[in-house]
Image (cartoon, rainbow over all chains, first blue to last red):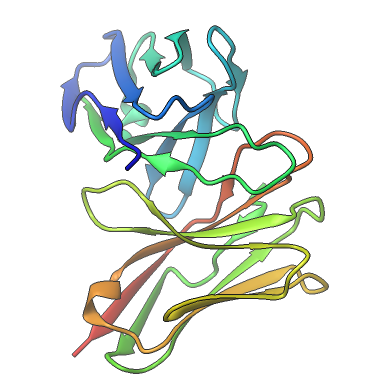
Length: 115
Length: 113
Protein backbone atom coordinates (compact mmCIF):
# COMPACT_ATOMS: atom_id res chain seq x y z
CA UNK A 1 0.00 0.00 0.00
CA UNK A 2 1.07 3.53 -0.75
CA UNK A 3 1.93 5.44 2.36
CA UNK A 4 1.99 9.22 2.57
CA UNK A 5 3.12 10.40 5.97
CA UNK A 6 2.70 13.89 7.34
CA UNK A 7 4.99 14.67 10.25
CA UNK A 8 2.45 16.31 12.56
CA UNK A 9 -1.22 15.60 13.15
CA UNK A 10 -1.86 18.82 15.07
CA UNK A 11 0.21 21.98 15.18
CA UNK A 12 -0.31 25.25 17.06
CA UNK A 13 1.79 28.25 16.07
CA UNK A 14 1.84 31.96 16.76
CA UNK A 15 1.33 34.72 14.20
CA UNK A 16 4.59 35.58 12.49
CA UNK A 17 6.30 32.27 13.16
CA UNK A 18 7.95 30.30 10.36
CA UNK A 19 6.20 26.96 9.99
CA UNK A 20 7.41 23.79 8.27
CA UNK A 21 5.01 21.02 7.29
CA UNK A 22 6.75 17.84 6.20
CA UNK A 23 5.48 15.06 3.95
CA UNK A 24 7.13 11.79 2.96
CA UNK A 25 5.88 9.16 0.50
CA UNK A 26 7.25 5.65 0.14
CA UNK A 27 6.16 4.66 -3.38
CA UNK A 28 8.69 6.49 -5.54
CA UNK A 29 5.99 8.79 -6.92
CA UNK A 30 7.12 11.57 -9.19
CA UNK A 31 4.35 14.00 -8.29
CA UNK A 32 3.66 15.56 -4.91
CA UNK A 33 1.03 18.09 -3.91
CA UNK A 34 -0.02 20.31 -1.03
CA UNK A 35 -3.71 21.12 -0.57
CA UNK A 36 -5.59 22.89 2.18
CA UNK A 37 -9.12 22.00 3.19
CA UNK A 38 -11.49 24.62 4.56
CA UNK A 39 -15.22 24.32 5.31
CA UNK A 40 -17.31 25.33 2.32
CA UNK A 41 -14.25 25.70 0.10
CA UNK A 42 -13.24 22.08 -0.42
CA UNK A 43 -9.65 21.20 -1.25
CA UNK A 44 -7.57 23.93 -2.83
CA UNK A 45 -4.16 23.34 -4.38
CA UNK A 46 -1.30 25.37 -2.91
CA UNK A 47 1.79 24.02 -4.68
CA UNK A 48 2.85 20.91 -6.54
CA UNK A 49 6.02 19.33 -7.81
CA UNK A 50 6.68 16.99 -10.73
CA UNK A 51 10.27 16.22 -9.88
CA UNK A 52 13.06 16.89 -7.45
CA UNK A 53 13.83 20.60 -7.17
CA UNK A 54 10.84 21.43 -9.34
CA UNK A 55 7.83 23.31 -8.08
CA UNK A 56 4.77 24.93 -9.57
CA UNK A 57 2.20 27.24 -8.08
CA UNK A 58 -1.28 25.96 -7.56
CA UNK A 59 -4.41 28.03 -7.11
CA UNK A 60 -3.57 29.68 -3.78
CA UNK A 61 0.24 29.94 -3.41
CA UNK A 62 0.34 33.33 -1.67
CA UNK A 63 2.02 33.16 1.73
CA UNK A 64 3.51 29.72 1.08
CA UNK A 65 6.66 28.22 -0.38
CA UNK A 66 7.79 24.63 -0.90
CA UNK A 67 10.94 22.58 -1.04
CA UNK A 68 11.64 19.25 -2.73
CA UNK A 69 15.27 18.27 -2.26
CA UNK A 70 14.59 14.53 -2.38
CA UNK A 71 12.04 12.62 -4.42
CA UNK A 72 10.23 11.20 -1.42
CA UNK A 73 9.96 14.42 0.59
CA UNK A 74 7.92 17.57 -0.04
CA UNK A 75 7.88 20.39 2.49
CA UNK A 76 5.41 23.23 2.78
CA UNK A 77 6.74 26.42 4.37
CA UNK A 78 4.75 29.27 5.84
CA UNK A 79 7.31 32.07 5.97
CA UNK A 80 5.31 34.18 8.43
CA UNK A 81 2.19 32.43 9.67
CA UNK A 82 -1.05 34.37 9.78
CA UNK A 83 -4.41 33.54 11.31
CA UNK A 84 -6.01 33.04 7.87
CA UNK A 85 -3.64 30.13 7.36
CA UNK A 86 -5.38 28.16 10.08
CA UNK A 87 -6.55 25.12 8.15
CA UNK A 88 -6.25 21.39 7.49
CA UNK A 89 -3.23 20.79 5.25
CA UNK A 90 -3.16 17.67 3.11
CA UNK A 91 -0.18 16.26 1.26
CA UNK A 92 -0.67 13.91 -1.69
CA UNK A 93 1.43 12.01 -4.19
CA UNK A 94 0.90 10.23 -7.52
CA UNK A 95 2.70 8.53 -10.39
CA UNK A 96 3.38 10.66 -13.40
CA UNK A 97 0.70 9.62 -15.87
CA UNK A 98 0.22 12.55 -18.18
CA UNK A 99 -2.19 11.50 -20.87
CA UNK A 100 -4.19 9.16 -18.67
CA UNK A 101 -6.06 9.37 -15.43
CA UNK A 102 -4.27 10.44 -12.30
CA UNK A 103 -5.02 9.09 -8.85
CA UNK A 104 -3.77 10.93 -5.80
CA UNK A 105 -2.86 9.26 -2.54
CA UNK A 106 -3.30 11.47 0.50
CA UNK A 107 -1.72 11.70 3.90
CA UNK A 108 -3.86 11.98 7.05
CA UNK A 109 -3.49 15.74 7.19
CA UNK A 110 -2.06 18.33 9.57
CA UNK A 111 -4.50 20.56 11.42
CA UNK A 112 -2.66 23.85 11.82
CA UNK A 113 -3.92 26.54 14.17
CA UNK A 114 -2.29 29.96 14.03
CA UNK A 115 -3.03 32.08 17.10
CA UNK B 1 -13.73 30.90 -9.83
CA UNK B 2 -15.00 27.48 -8.76
CA UNK B 3 -14.51 25.18 -11.72
CA UNK B 4 -15.91 22.14 -9.93
CA UNK B 5 -19.07 22.63 -7.89
CA UNK B 6 -20.99 20.46 -5.49
CA UNK B 7 -24.13 22.44 -4.76
CA UNK B 8 -25.42 20.26 -1.93
CA UNK B 9 -23.31 20.70 1.21
CA UNK B 10 -25.08 17.84 2.94
CA UNK B 11 -27.34 14.87 2.26
CA UNK B 12 -29.15 12.50 4.60
CA UNK B 13 -30.29 9.08 3.38
CA UNK B 14 -31.77 6.07 5.12
CA UNK B 15 -29.81 2.86 5.26
CA UNK B 16 -30.59 0.63 2.29
CA UNK B 17 -31.78 3.45 0.06
CA UNK B 18 -29.93 5.07 -2.82
CA UNK B 19 -27.61 8.02 -2.25
CA UNK B 20 -27.08 10.36 -5.19
CA UNK B 21 -24.32 12.95 -5.00
CA UNK B 22 -24.02 15.53 -7.74
CA UNK B 23 -21.17 17.52 -9.22
CA UNK B 24 -21.02 20.15 -11.96
CA UNK B 25 -17.99 21.50 -13.76
CA UNK B 26 -17.39 24.47 -16.02
CA UNK B 27 -14.06 23.72 -17.71
CA UNK B 28 -14.71 21.86 -20.97
CA UNK B 29 -11.06 20.74 -21.04
CA UNK B 30 -11.60 18.39 -18.09
CA UNK B 31 -11.56 14.81 -19.34
CA UNK B 32 -11.03 12.68 -16.25
CA UNK B 33 -13.16 12.70 -13.13
CA UNK B 34 -12.80 11.10 -9.71
CA UNK B 35 -14.70 10.77 -6.47
CA UNK B 36 -12.94 10.74 -3.12
CA UNK B 37 -14.33 9.91 0.30
CA UNK B 38 -13.07 11.53 3.47
CA UNK B 39 -13.67 10.49 7.06
CA UNK B 40 -12.93 12.93 9.90
CA UNK B 41 -9.27 13.04 10.92
CA UNK B 42 -8.23 11.08 7.83
CA UNK B 43 -7.01 12.03 4.36
CA UNK B 44 -9.31 11.57 1.35
CA UNK B 45 -9.28 8.13 -0.21
CA UNK B 46 -9.97 7.34 -3.85
CA UNK B 47 -13.38 5.82 -4.54
CA UNK B 48 -14.09 5.64 -8.26
CA UNK B 49 -13.17 7.41 -11.48
CA UNK B 50 -14.43 7.89 -15.02
CA UNK B 51 -12.85 8.98 -18.26
CA UNK B 52 -14.69 11.32 -20.61
CA UNK B 53 -14.84 8.56 -23.24
CA UNK B 54 -17.33 6.76 -21.00
CA UNK B 55 -20.68 7.76 -19.56
CA UNK B 56 -20.84 5.21 -16.76
CA UNK B 57 -18.48 3.30 -14.52
CA UNK B 58 -19.43 0.80 -11.83
CA UNK B 59 -17.56 -0.62 -8.89
CA UNK B 60 -19.68 -2.70 -6.56
CA UNK B 61 -22.22 -0.47 -4.82
CA UNK B 62 -20.77 2.66 -6.43
CA UNK B 63 -21.62 3.95 -9.90
CA UNK B 64 -20.50 7.20 -11.47
CA UNK B 65 -22.43 8.73 -14.36
CA UNK B 66 -21.02 11.40 -16.65
CA UNK B 67 -23.10 13.72 -18.83
CA UNK B 68 -20.57 15.67 -20.88
CA UNK B 69 -23.08 17.87 -22.65
CA UNK B 70 -24.43 19.04 -19.31
CA UNK B 71 -20.98 19.08 -17.69
CA UNK B 72 -22.45 17.05 -14.86
CA UNK B 73 -21.48 13.91 -13.02
CA UNK B 74 -23.15 12.00 -10.25
CA UNK B 75 -22.21 9.28 -7.80
CA UNK B 76 -24.81 6.67 -6.92
CA UNK B 77 -24.42 4.48 -3.86
CA UNK B 78 -26.79 1.51 -3.70
CA UNK B 79 -27.60 0.34 -1.12
CA UNK B 80 -26.36 2.99 1.27
CA UNK B 81 -24.73 1.78 4.49
CA UNK B 82 -23.92 3.62 7.75
CA UNK B 83 -20.20 3.23 6.98
CA UNK B 84 -20.73 5.37 3.88
CA UNK B 85 -21.27 8.41 6.10
CA UNK B 86 -18.43 10.73 5.13
CA UNK B 87 -17.63 13.81 3.06
CA UNK B 88 -17.48 13.11 -0.66
CA UNK B 89 -15.40 15.23 -3.01
CA UNK B 90 -15.56 15.13 -6.77
CA UNK B 91 -12.43 16.09 -8.67
CA UNK B 92 -11.52 16.74 -12.29
CA UNK B 93 -8.41 16.99 -14.41
CA UNK B 94 -7.21 17.67 -17.93
CA UNK B 95 -5.02 14.68 -18.73
CA UNK B 96 -3.40 16.42 -21.66
CA UNK B 97 -1.68 19.00 -19.54
CA UNK B 98 -0.88 19.23 -15.86
CA UNK B 99 -1.69 16.24 -13.72
CA UNK B 100 -3.20 18.22 -10.87
CA UNK B 101 -6.75 17.65 -9.72
CA UNK B 102 -9.33 20.38 -9.15
CA UNK B 103 -11.69 19.49 -6.32
CA UNK B 104 -15.24 20.45 -5.53
CA UNK B 105 -16.40 21.79 -2.17
CA UNK B 106 -17.64 18.45 -0.88
CA UNK B 107 -20.96 16.91 0.17
CA UNK B 108 -21.40 15.49 3.64
CA UNK B 109 -23.40 12.26 3.43
CA UNK B 110 -25.11 10.89 6.49
CA UNK B 111 -26.66 7.45 6.28
CA UNK B 112 -29.19 6.94 9.04
CA UNK B 113 -30.46 3.67 10.49
